[in-house]
Image 1: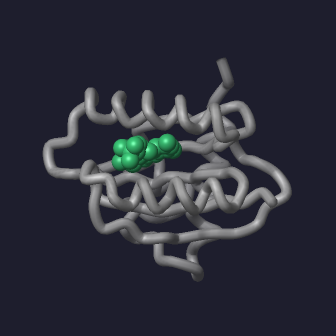
Image 2 (image 1 turned 60 degrees about the horizontal axis):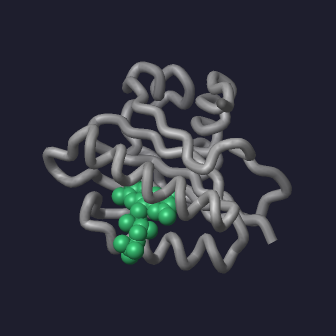
Length: 137
Ligand SMILES: Cc1cc2nc3c(=O)[nH]c(=O)nc-3n(C[C@H](O)[C@H](O)[C@H](O)COP(=O)(O)O)c2cc1C
């Protein structure tokens, strides 16, 4: 069964472009092999990630991601069965987004303003908006 999961987290202090590139390299290898797709957004030293895939694989992956010391204070915002993927062609898309773009799309300026459940639809809306500007390579 296809599920989607969205969480937010705080990147470790002083995280570098190289750290993020390393995360993406690992992520894309595993995700490709396990049919996980999604998108990682970065703003103001915070991450927002959408992960899509088969329930058990997704849960195992999320447990692993939670233990990663390149970020802290993970908050699960959204976890739901779904019929379609927002990012069918991306093993892990990545975009650094400006606060004004986040504000323009969903009316908040920081990922920490997303709260679990009540605003989970809002976080998904942001991914949908971002994906419409992307072309798969
Ligand atoms: C923000 C963030 C997003 C990540 N996303 C993924 C991902 O989509 N897929 C993945 O396999 N690993 C991802 N990782 C890396 C995992 O946390 C972990 O390093 C990787 O699965 C290897 O696990 P291991 O070191 O226990 O073997 C992510 C890490 C961070 C910090």
